[in-house]
Image 1: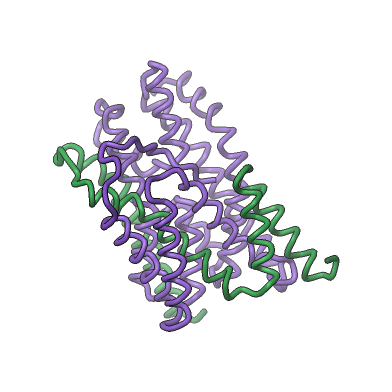
Image 2: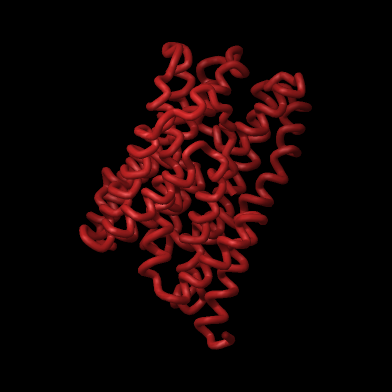
Length: 103
Length: 238
């Protein structure tokens, strides 16, 4: 990374910090003003995390190669019952096994 | 400051760091892999201080996504904090403005959940307790970030040791954490299809905004099955 890119990174981090703080104080500010959030807006806001995060999962699954897809499938099955930490451990073990020829 | 309550907070925060530490280290390692220095990684943990969104941020930065989109994505992933701060307002009315500033800056998922639980048990959410609980988590988050970043710099090829699958799986775990919300399946299906198509036809990083928008717009357009439906505002971050 060159100096200009690094400066960009610092700006991005600081802007992200301000944006995050805005969310953490925003609800407090809103609740003391706003009495009521329209239901469609609330539905849209509720959908934001799953919608954003899915865009970081689905393309990796489709375009990441068979080893990545296989480990994500196994991790998905694990995640229906167990914690994210266990998903990571099992998914990692699967991809390592495939890449290093144990499977 | 009440020392007893501060210490009680420290003690109660300890289990949280046991669960969060691996993610702090993972963030540090992956940040370095995406071009961050150790100092950059620690700076992000110290100022943004929101694990999942930090992961999203480094992933997008590594992909050379435009800065405004990175910031917007981090904002979107952290948007649930609006609900936390709205809900926490009842319990921190008596804080001074400075105390409120710190309380909201340190408002991560377990902090919110534990504050609500404490209020539910009839205990006051004093600033001493709140700060004790928050500081132990905050401090260890910075330490584990640094440890992961130092360790990450010693790693050669991230693919050979399987580091590259950890982020998608981590995000998959986060998605699953929202599976009890209204409209979860249609939102995920719409965002998945739209992001995969956008990746193919438009390219990275637009798959993020196009895919996300598809799910969000669909959620707003779907008929309102239960207008006063119950919603659990506490999401598990890990």
